[in-house]
Length: 125
Image (cartoon, rainbow, N blue to C red; front, side, top):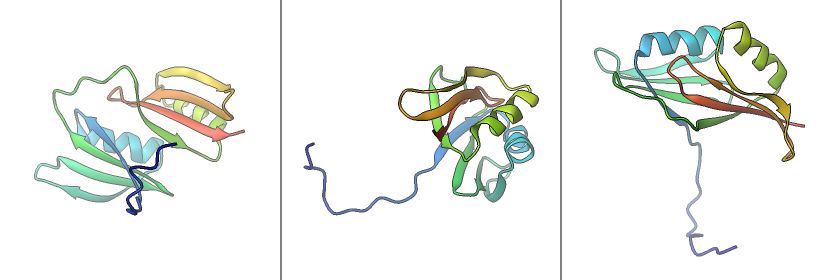
């Protein structure tokens, strides 16, 4: 592997920035269904929000004309993928790729949040 970009800078946390059409509805979903808590918000009206749960962090940004992409925009590792899959199904979320064991060592599925953002969820097998 080419190490030409190994310049000594250490990288830290990186968080998914998810565009949403209605930040209040998105917050309700991420807090009530997935259990995230708000740690920061900005604007009046609010146009940006940071949500955290355990080691995961999601940044919501208000984009009223947002049209969701047809590819995964974030990958979330969890300790119990089967339980989260059940939660997503009970919440009526669209499951894009069903829960299954992958040949690359993860048990995984993909769901869409209420704004159509596709989240790939996995757990090491």
